Image (cartoon, rainbow, N blue to C red):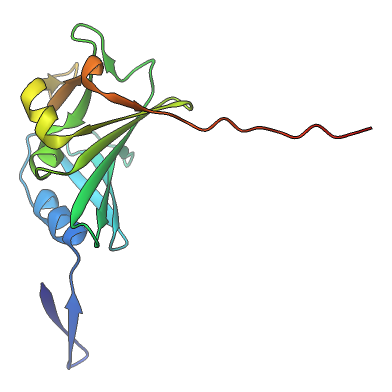
Length: 169
């Protein structure tokens, strides 16, 4: 997609990447009590959860979206702190529902849990086994729709162990 901007009276044409188009669509949504901000460099977009009602400038990262030009596929990466971000009742991991709804069949979701484990799942499988839940903060100010995927359905990606060579004395 081409975007035309006029800067200081001159006409410039810019080619927009898929990431930027999706990020703009998500940022334009009117959500109850919060908004989703983004920072993009073209092929990587970092999404942030920003509360509209609290007097704070803190923004929480809720996912990174990468676009592969060769395959025309997205990869969503979610960093998980195992102490706080696992839904224990259903033993599942959550992704923001708005971001999840923009993913297409054939795309992947990656979960990096702690420092050692990485899991993946294809979007079409996630839609079959996952479910939506509405999360509300303790004050009832905002509600965030999340899509939860059971841990048992994720495929673990083996990590390479670093081997260190022993120095000879």
